[in-house]
Length: 165
View 1 (tube, rainbow, N blue to C red):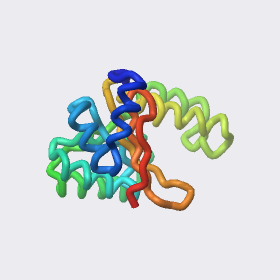
View 2 (tube, one colour; view 1 turned 180 degrees about the vertical axis):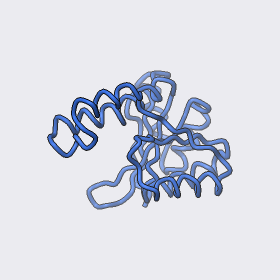
View 3 (cartoon, rainbow, N blue to C red; view 1 turned 90 degrees about the horizontal axis):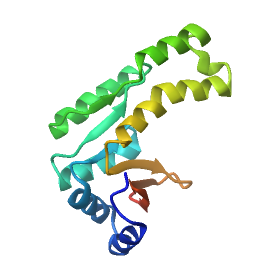
């Protein structure tokens, strides 16, 4: 990511007053190298719906860590059917996973913070970084301290955060 200067982002930010404005700007300026990361929680549902109303060719991806519950796969299937899309699944390097399990154990992330960071690095951070290297923009949803959902658009630097619910 690095398509815009900070000055260009600051100028764009002045005109973006709603989450829909933010998403429309992102699609107009970054598509098709724009994607939404999703874990299919409540914070994602509203953003996904907005995205597909703005652009039916929206890209979604998820981290398939090898440890996801059935409910996540059910949610993936529902989103794919509802929006007639295919969600990109990012997988960890199997050699890294195998080495970690052999050396630390299958559930090593319960043993220490160090092991938790190792596991998340292999199963989440590395695949995410590979994906982000191919994009000009990344959309995600977060909950703020009032438990409200916030849209985050990152594009060379953090561009915009705004409450949506």
